[in-house]
Length: 423
Image 1: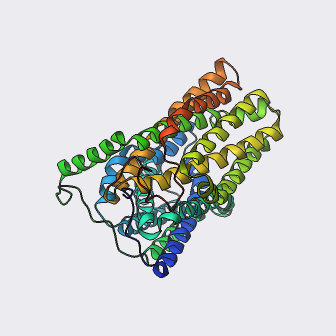
Image 2: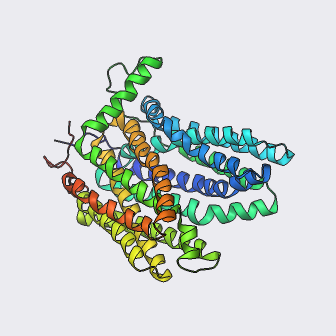
């Protein structure tokens, strides 16, 4: 018996260069993304002094995830390489157009909202396809290591390199960050063109049909699969709670750092750097941890570490300890991400992996606004320690849901009885 997502692997000699291309492409586009994340709010504020429209531009990019199940269906119906290259080229064109528009000084907030939404749609296409193509390129025992390398590349680009480069380029000349973003997307697309064109054959009845009805039927099939698989269903619940807890804390973190910890203005940046360092450390150790403990136990460790880090801060608000706990929390979140991505790649049928990925991430992203609102309300009416306590207690309550997650170690997934879904 094999897991539903077990791929037919490429030869070892052809697999490694393809994985290098995938990781390098993610690293390049992440640097551009980080630059854009820093510069786009500055551009919105420069174009309009209205804080409401600045927040609308920021929200528009994330609103695309509301379309994720439908986009996942489209990803499942085309070769993964084509989805990623098309998404990169589309974002390249959009960023170069934005560069030209900003250079002429004719930007409008409406155009920024539409561009943020369109680039967000392309991002969803790319992310779903990137996770779906990994099992085609990596052996089962390589999934955790490959996913950890991809996540580490994204963290480095969006957390360390991109934002300061974007801010510096903005200071030199406002259009430059968007030119950089366009160039990195183009470089990523050129790299991805060298990936093997193999893709999982569609096994879904009616997958070759065209039209809205077929698209909706395929989308519903993916959501139904997520709801019926016990392991994936439980993981969706826990990741939604993770999103609520994380956003409850981070939504008020800047206020917490100033008022509760008494740090100056740079204190908030210090906490974000500590969290980013923890994320990178977690990505470096995630594959070894998953190999040592197995996915099930690794997920329990990740949730337990995150929960305890929140509760420690709720009880002991001392800034060095808070920085350490944020680093530990971020490491736990990355371990969770590496293990859950790999589990989805093993449990989902290859022809449904795009939909499974998009539906799962919709649960994560959809819960975040709830967490941000809850954290703000609690901090206002109860105190700035309350969001930390809420996040920790919610995560501890989720631990029983992880009892049914398979703990088989990577590479031994072919043993019967180790997965909730099998061929």
